[in-house]
Length: 110
Image 1 (tube, helix red, strand yellow):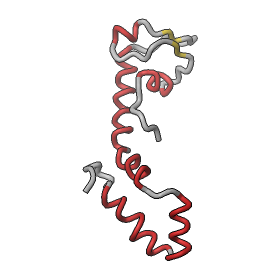
Image 2 (cartoon, rainbow, N blue to C red):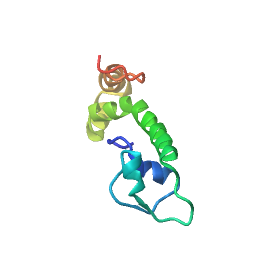
Image 3 (cartoon, helix red, strand yellow):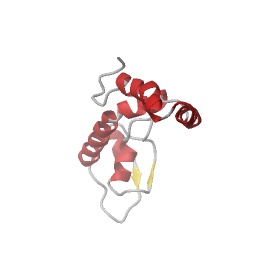
Image 4 (cartoon, rainbow, N blue to C red):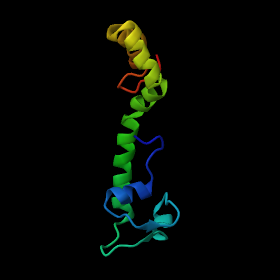
């Protein structure tokens, strides 16, 4: 799970083009200056932009997971909680508050 939103190079990699050099393009004009070393024909900007939009939508949909990851205590703390107080207390005191704060619908902190 990446902390940063995907870019055009990520889209190219996702399309199977791994040997890419140059600055990360953000529009069609910049894309024309990108060097893609491949035996296959380079995809058009529209193909790359469509893949980038798909990757960005998937990345955005996982915002709740990134936020939860930041809010959960480290594993040692969680394991100590389970050992000391049991799984039920761990769930109600450590897990449930974070899940309530960051619901899967990405509606933000409660």
